Length: 375
Ligand code: 5AD
Ligand code: FES
Image (cartoon, rainbow, N blue to C red; front, side, top):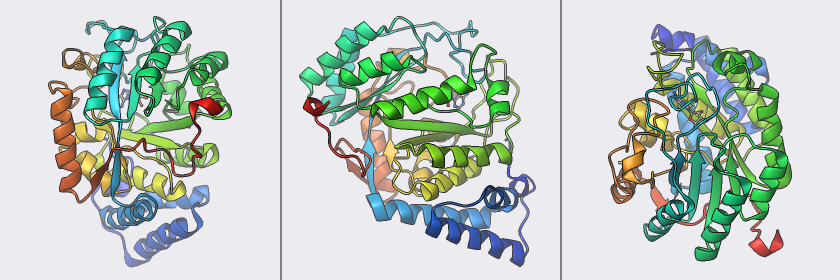
């Protein structure tokens, strides 16, 4: 386990002065919705399990104030594991030779959406490695067909970096939201984790383009990736506050042994949850998924995230036969389940921790409802 918070590394306890200073900072953050960099850093450098419990409870209260105990569901379809990018942590990056590659056709994607619709999902998240097979033309056709057959759904795309023109075309064809994790707001760490041909600036440019076009935008980052420091995590908080995304996906780094980063320790549950909580406090109304990575790290990782301010779950509705191939990290959950099984499993988990499923489209609460005719 790769602990970044030094006091968790040694499982130490704080003296009373340090502990009350952290509690004061958490209270200040809850009230003022932001802190100075050095204050965030003080928290991360000194926090122990005791203050994390306090932080997580505060985050839960803020979520409850805006969204109560409702959890929005998104049906996730992993349409292709072909990827031309070189994220060194990711098990489907172009260099990995050990996996069989697959991609779904538009007809197959539509079938997944239709069966997801019958399970009650009203948002589909269509995710892929960066695969040039999915041209604007093909995607526009796919979007039109989804929206024609199911006009009451939201479509979220998560297909990586594209040009502004492409994002605009996909938006005009009916896409509502776009997920593109910023991965890390630290230039040093970004460059360490990605192939030389990838660009920190372009990733940010993509996110600002998406916002400018009018998408509901999701950013996000991993916790515990090799060489990540508390300073890097503070940069993530500062960047997110500045960007003001509608969604933020946060999960632990999980080591994949077929990647360049093999042999590294994975991120931890406590630190990932603490980052979820801090993001809830800086962006009180943000949509926060209890991520699959959290569920893969720990059997009840996602449930713990719901108790820490998360309010989204993304059950997998990909064809079961392809699921194991979308192996961005090892020991990923749900790879042998059917969409039906995930639906039931997720419901049980949500209800089990005192939450309820909301099958609405689940827009960010500040979003004015735009209909397709308004575009
Ligand atoms: N561990 C955890 N998360 C990962 N991702 C990719 N590879 C890994 C890994 N090994 C995350 C990235 C990406 C998202 C789809 O999954 O943050 O944006
Ligand atoms: Fe897929 Fe639990 S969510 S099996």
